[in-house]
Image (cartoon, rainbow, N blue to C red):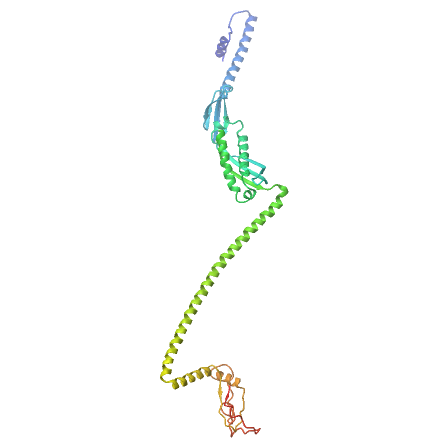
Length: 365
């Protein structure tokens, strides 16, 4: 330190040795003060030079400025630059996602007022452009965002904004915002833009809510009607096809029956031409057989001097199928003095009234 002090003294014009005691003492004190000053200067120089060390963190970039002019970009890690005021470093995060929100009343294309709340997310794409091309980058992004969303809102109707157009408006506004920032050279990339809220102003919200509910009811009724039509039309088509098939089957059946009747009549005509009497008798017998086979008939042949005693024939007829295998009670056996049909014979049932029976009463049904 003594040698350094001597060198500094010689550098700043100090002299050593000689003189009287008082003079020697004064020069010694002067040398000591000079040594302290020199030491302080050395320490200040070291500190000043050490202030040039800086560290750039992960995801950051350091912009080195020399007398305010851009020099270079420092990557993450430790670095050194000429100390202030010669050079200075501005560190900017280029990986962080920054978010800006804005809410305002805007005018739609159909002259309605709507309350819009939007949010945009962006990050720094070029740190040099971000710092030097615009004065306040964040304010620039905010103003550009508001301008872009106002442009899209001003070109759209209120119903479209409140309905299906909210997402599309956000997408197109994001593209408009990115084009504007690129034209400014802001060095910013917009990553996302969303319309968080779009609603009418507070005084008219209830009326707009009623209108929205009416539109929702309209859509629901339309869907229900379409669903009903989609279910009814196939059913009606199926019924129509079934009716057509039944009609065609009935047509074929009638035609076949008519053809069969015509063929039978032709054959019968040929037989009738060969033997008319025999054919008429056979037709008569077949007709009587067909009629009697479908009806319950009791044939009685009584003498003119006998009584005709009528029994409950419906019970008699019901007893016959029960006797043949039904579950009802068996008919009681007839009395020996009666015929099989419950009618008295001339010798067994004398005429109590003395009246003569009608000889024409031959058949009872």
